Length: 357
Figure 1 (cartoon, rainbow, N blue to C red):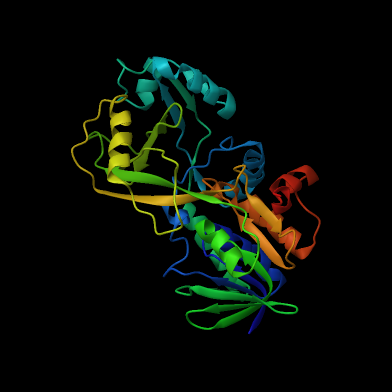
Figure 2: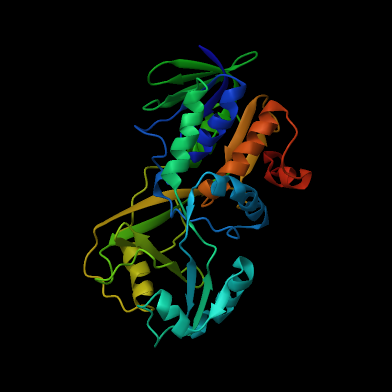
């Protein structure tokens, strides 16, 4: 069967765009893994930080806020930043960038009682930093695809891509697919997909971020504790179903693969964390990692390729995929359908793949 829109990648990028396009034509999403949202999408910090990212990302975050609120995807959490004396510059830079409010150590202990007051000198807090229900939004977009007769094919590995006169032919481990518009939403593999399609890659960089899950730091409930991070992105931690997540916040460049946590990197991050809190970690329950894939300027890439007809980039979500999904997928669908756009022309230009020479 020939589809109007053939999407490679079943993470939040491909699934959200599939949901937007499905009411307007036939959609098929191809995903290599057994389930959608397996890679970076399934390993998210699951927070909505409206002022997180560069200016273009923040604009997409803010444009996505109404959708997240209306869909019921947000629940109260809060974000706290801890800084030592040597973290002063990065601490106050983050206050200004993310609209955090400096609070006293005493106020902070009411919210997060395990702060090491001997090492922590600065604390800030942002109340408007909710959890984001990443599974619900992913599944809701998938329902949009299927409700409009779209197809999501899992366990379908793309092997070859060929440009035909007026369409694309994609060979997989199962069967051949044909689509008028080919949408590259393949996460860490976007440049590899481009090469298969004989399209110039855009030099995306997948960067690993690891997380450890450890037992709760206290016998008391931690469900209302905020997400906490060390100023300068030295680590972050947050509650997770009665346990406690800790990330070293690394950004280590990697080749595209099914990422796993590096024990040494985790140990170093946990050591940085442990020096700022009163929490002795004696065991890990589990650990994992994801690849956050960034463009050269750390903004998303949304638009038709500058040289190849009907090849659409929807890539470079980095650590902002779920946050930006509503606005980014809306813009992408508008560009593909040649509809009037919801964002300013300057924003569209800043997101376009044509910005790269």
